[in-house]
Image (cartoon, rainbow, N blue to C red; front, side):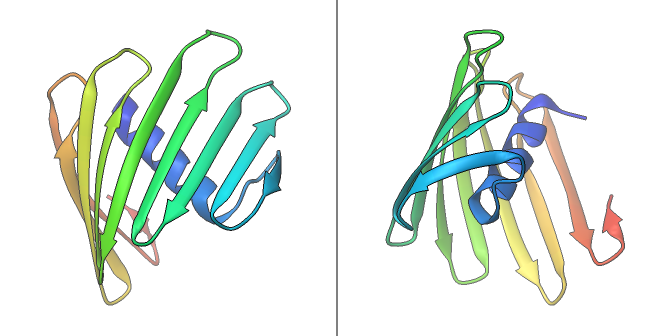
Length: 118
């Protein structure tokens, strides 16, 4: 699938749990590192979350900033290749609908629910 969507999804998951990563800090600022030497900084303030990541194997970095208002989240980011991307998510019931543009300028959209994503 699209690189930026994968990055966004991985980063979004890192907000709630840090599987296979060790983290330190508080609820408003955390620094995490995984077994591959990658590092992630997560800073929360109000309805905004800012993330910055570094890939130790490639030397590349990425970042994203998300704002949440009610059941909608708006995310803008910079991929490791330097391209910018964006994604909008809206949760309705048990389904999250998303759409955006990846770092290559390609549009994407879909939804995720209890039985997976499409």
